[in-house]
Length: 214
Image (cartoon, rainbow, N blue to C red):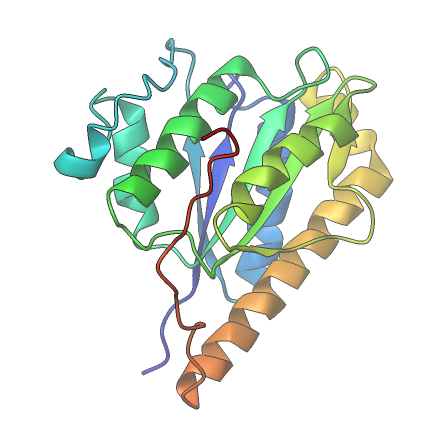
């Protein structure tokens, strides 16, 4: 039986059904049409602590701060692809998104979990006006440091508007969400097809870390 492919959508906005959600919902609808299951994880409006750089996750197998970050990482184990959405705050991702993703990706990596490497990921940004490309560049770095496959649309993955109703009127932005969703679905199906004929992820070398000051 063919594996059901799943994409986890991350909503880094404090507003559960705001502008970022509106873009992610368009992606979710298109993924469903492509036969891909998706789920939206909302970071919420509670304060998210930043990484303590304590390294406890190496021994604990999870972040020492036991909050929604650990919930997300546990949930992520069952997903094949990821789309991270954030509003633009001061030409950057929201503070909650940065603190959340720092801890999620770091603790998953340090604890030895193979949740993110070699899986496709994409970022989307929602803004009233500007700061989107800087935000996308910031979010994409989480994928590239984890050997993930970047998925794009036909333009930079952004929507514009102050309200969800405004975002719906961003016809080009919403169309690009559909392009992105179909590209994500295609990438997942290609990876699955490769696995079915014995094409596995690359062999991993032991990681070497070089300190510039000795």
